Image 1 (tube, rainbow, N blue to C red):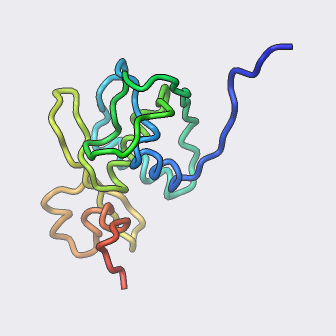
Image 2 (image 1 turned 30 degrees about the vertical axis):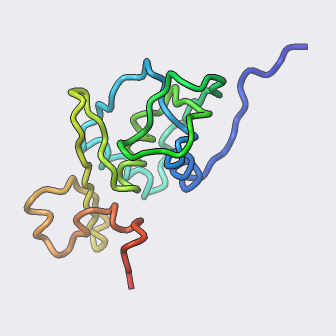
Length: 152
């Protein structure tokens, strides 16, 4: 009898973000830096908002204490038990937008990704100076998940 090599596990978005925030989910050292353009992050936000499928994630259980990188630039409490093998760009995008933390780009510089949302037209945009001035937009949706934001 053969041993099962793959196991399907269903995580909700809050669980994934929470595990990344703790450091339980990380990146293998060999993983490339974050390369998505901000417009692609906007498109992912739009797809999720509309309920479109955004693909599977492939995570690998890590038995070693080292050889990993964190997702985002914030400090973590744990070392990664799960490594992102496929889905790094999507998970990093979601984590960066929800937690409001910068990503590390190909040139190893940190950059914050600001995605704006217009609730009247249900439209996402990459925040720029014009969108930040437009009162019909929430200029940075990261604020919606911040514990410091009082939406009432």
